[in-house]
Length: 214
Image 1: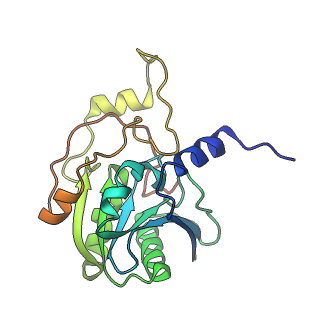
Image 2 (image 1 turned 30 degrees about the horizontal axis):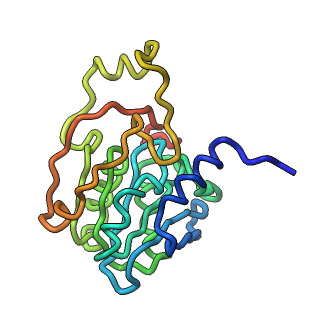
Image 3 (image 1 turned 60 degrees about the vertical axis):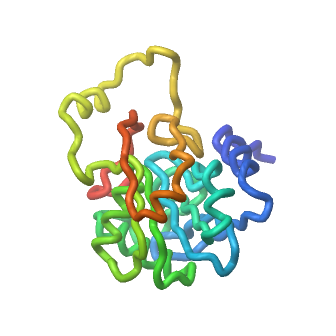
C-alpha cells in the first residue's frame, strides 16, 4: 500500500477548508484531464478562477464561500502545473496551446461565456484568453498580473535565477499557496462588480515559461 505524499496530504488538508458542498470535476481535454473545484448555486453566474504559478485551484479557499453566494465558482488546477490535473495527450508547446486548452475546458464545463479571474501567472493566462476569445469572457478581474502591464525587472530575474538563502526560513509553494505563499486577497466581490482591480506587488515562485511549456 502506497502512503500518500506530503503534497497529497497538504492538498487534501486544503481541500477540507472548502465548503462541504464543493464538487470535484475532472474535465477531459485534448491535453489531459483537468481538475476543477466547483462551488456555488447551480444557476449562479459562472466564474472561472485561475491560480498563480505552482499553486492549485484550492488557493481560493478563503474566497469561495463569499463568491459562491452569487457565482457558480470553477477553481482550476492549471494544466502543466501543480495539482491533480493530468497532463496527457497533446503536448503543451506554445501559449496558443494554453488558449486551446482553456477553450476545451470551458466547453467541457458547458460554459459558453463566463467571468474570469486570475492571480499572477493565472492573470497572465486570463488576459491571454480574453484576447483570444473575447466573446467568451464577460468580466475580467486581475490580481497582481504577471508580465501583463510590464515585464520583469532585470534584478528580479537575476534573483529568481540565482536565489540566495532565505532570511526567515524556506517559503515553499504549497498546493494552495503558490507565488511566494500568498493566497489571493479576500475582497474579490467588489472588483468583479466594478470590473477592475488594483494589483499590488508580491514575491513570486518561479514557473515554466508559457511559450516553452512546463
